[in-house]
Length: 312
Image 1: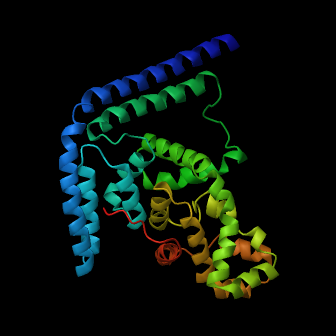
Image 2 (image 1 turned 45 degrees about the vertical axis):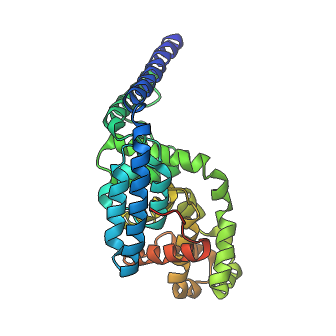
Image 3 (image 1 turned 135 degrees about the vertical axis):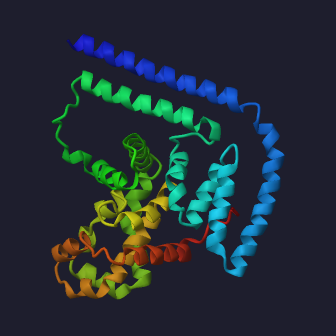
């Protein structure tokens, strides 16, 4: 039976590889001839776009120009990943374009516009191939329990489900986002508790001393804040704005959201005198002003880390 299962899995894996090779050929055949023709037009568009961005910001219509700038970026035949990252770092993504930008930045779909539908078609088929393979080898079934070691993945998945209607899109977004956290940001995430202490010392030394006196610094909900990227802590509308920054390359924003949470609830925290009570409160913060917390956190992040300089 084991040999049959192994052979079935090998067949399915071969099918997945073959389909991705077909995607590669399709993308090359469609777009290989068009890139040179677009370079001069892109340079001209960049110059005009940069002038408009500076002008609108000076006259106070930055919000209008943000959306227009993103729409211009998204009209390019080949999306510029660097500029999309910079835009996401500088501004909140409009909700109507957020999932598209996330999929591009996470590598779920390629930069080429005309290949998006084709690639998503193969993504859907790959999803069902993987799902079928897991059922064939009896790795999963309808009653498969959720294991504790999957807690981070499941927390992010639960939050993503509230943002994305399509379950297959949701799967790929969660999978690629968690993969980004475990690869690109792995080393940085481990340093965030120490960095949090450094910035909290700058912003409010008295609060830091209280947390240390209660032996709470080592017991803060770091997994909830940093490993889960505030999934299960912040509501959808606030969480999306934080994930914009993380997905586009900056996990350090997580530190400043944590700092701002501590500053916002300073009086409540100081009134608590044990690490357990402080941690319990921070794991279940009030949800009524989280948008303001995130806005202040972004301002604090820019104050300490600067604003990306690339014009969009």
